[in-house]
Image (tube, rainbow, N blue to C red; front, side):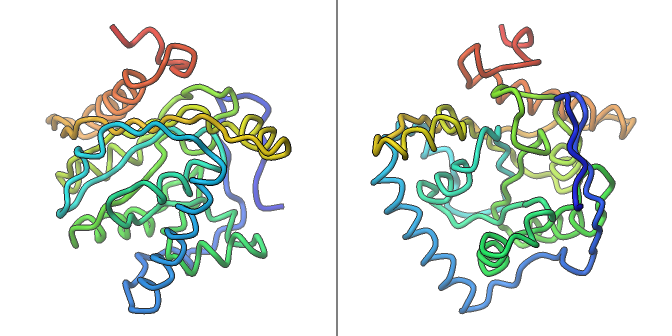
Length: 244
């Protein structure tokens, strides 16, 4: 068994099968770039067929330069929809547990994701992320550390804030609604299109502090508050009271 299943949303999952050799920043070879374009094309076709999407804020994605995209994570549709509608080809952090999935693991490996082992300091994933930002790439990370068990925001983990502070990177908050698995798959069975929203917020940077731990804690709170501010109340979860 690769992952411990926790019964409460307050406990984050831990990857038990640790394989550091799979974690690295993917090389942007001609073959990989072709596969990425192919997968984005497929994602766009599927999006047009199966969802009715309302997208706002695409102008907030810079054409060039490093940026860290942080997003809430409601279901399986988040990644393909984000890929379908993004104006840039992102590098994505993905849980290492998916590497062993026969089809999905191979697709993600071919696309080139940054595999991260959850529930522990994954220094190789951090180094890969910092290298990507140094190269001017757009990285995508879900600061909750997993797909939400509640359908709303859970407690944020410090990885996103750590990367942004270490790399002096701009952050773009992106939020999804309507992408919960029970909604998407139920509508697919009925041949109905799901109504989803994708909101791309204004870029911001985190404030540094003399104490590194304090800076990361405050940065994590700032990131999660930015996500909560873009979501309807029922999606804000533990950050509902942090939105004015």
